[in-house]
Length: 308
Length: 259
Image (cartoon, rainbow over all chains, first blue to last red; front, side, top):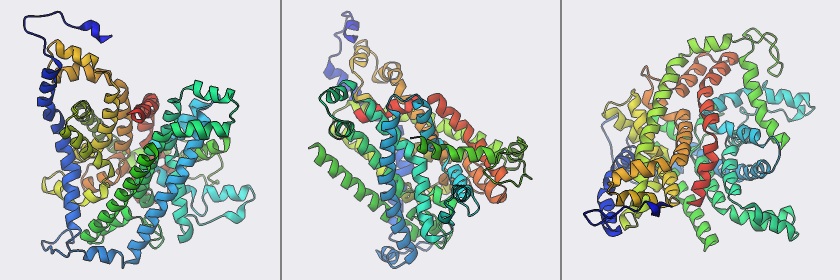
């Protein structure tokens, strides 16, 4: 291949690998610098500042700012609204991760088979991922309204007893939001599993089939282990996405009724930009970061265990 | 599979159905429109100032992607090629950004934007987007680059090309598939971003399409025909981009899985 393009000897000796390495190493920081500067500006510096604000009593506007240590964190755990938001966030993250990936995997197995409409289906299932969360939120707000399409369909097919005030009932609303989020992002899981499935050579599966392994055994002993990297990325993305959920809640319920569907993210927004409790929002953001870090560390351990 | 497909098609049917109904049509949301009309689209376009929102979203999305492709690909190059401790440390420093929730940085970044007079301007949103999408983009590029043979750039280096030249003339063109993935995924993220444009652009004349649609719904409360027409207008450009570039999505993830 490229070895055929070795240059003819010239006057100066051709630079050896070591010299080349050194010249790359010298220019390395010029390659990284713009990315690092933008990343520092938009992520690292404000994240550090945000963590520090969590230990003050700043309202975000006044010039007075006192160091109050862990007071904001204690008040989070004394506040029913914050506790509900934390509980909702954990519920959303765990449920979405489990259900979205289970359904995503089943769909991926389905559209990876030789059915005729597979290309159409792949596009169809991924389309909601592409659509603005705001649009998805409004669409489902209409669908789930008391006189909305879902209740009409339930009535028409004789399941009128199942009709609900989907977004207006505190007990039901959080599950309605979870269902919408799964509907929106199941295509994302599907695509990642599909990418993993396409990396499995057909011959391996065929060999197992010839040896008499049924579909379930083939999946469990051959496909599942080879999908390990896809599982890792999928679980990571959906868990982190679930923890940070904002847009859909903000559009469909604004955290209501009565704070029943608030997530940590919607509460941070309210604290910081509506209620003048800037440092309380910052403390909630730190709590959210700790959740995400803990979940990531846990997953990292699971991966190392499985691969080691 | 058919049932699942129905669950996905039904909301799309509803979206189109309601958007094409005449404003006076009192029939159920499930019934087909008696007199289909484009009038809702015309009204939504004018009343929601969606044209300005679309233009702003196009500007923000294109500039964000250009900066990301240039800076993330060039940063990922040494990070994936060099085996020094510093390059490993820098790579993980970037990946840490995947874990940091944006909410932690949101409040201070808002104030920084205010202090440097970038509130209300598209450049502020673009800067925030580029910085925040850097970790994921570098992750995609670095994964792809590890699988890329060194032969071509070594040949270029032997021919006397600088690292800069070897990268832009030889390595970058070889990365077309992953650049396609980077473009489509970041276009989707950027186009759909809501909270940051809402905060950084509120009160100014500038709006992205998500903020314009959100404001439009607030103003026209229960006029679902208008709202759904506006929503369709807001998703058509990104859906079109997706249909054109969709084959890169599976490819890109396949590359990421190997890396």
